[in-house]
Image (cartoon, rainbow, N blue to C red; front, side, top):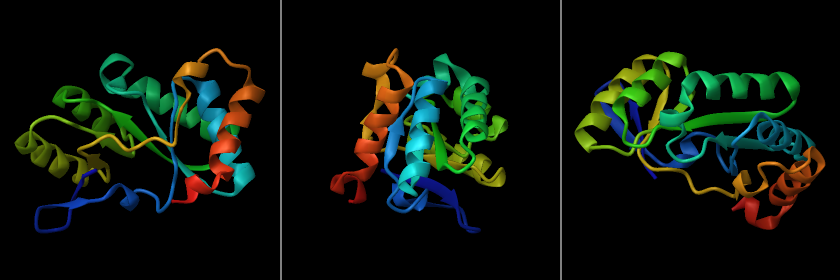
Length: 165
């Protein structure tokens, strides 16, 4: 996966681990998902990456995602995470996410557009990722699951040996 970030001389490519070293990626689709993931992270004393579903920046928007992350962080202040909003190949949605201050944004469009967006993002302290991160867990299939089930699934992932790779 690529991460474009300004280095003072233009943009350079980073791997995903530039976001948070060894932070498992959990795909969240609701506040309940984000709270469960952050609760599990706090319980396991691990940092995680909370990522949106594919193209969520287009259909939910950065306002919703930013509010979801803020509410989850408020609910679980001991949980440590980085947030990534996937904007697919939509440059407009990516620019909106940058303006909204989302920490990291996935843009999978043309490379020349990614370079320009990376410059804009870097000026705002935002990281631009050019490929979706590999998820340790996607909670989509448990959209309506009870909070204790969501928490258990997240804890299982964060305490498994595979989560440390």
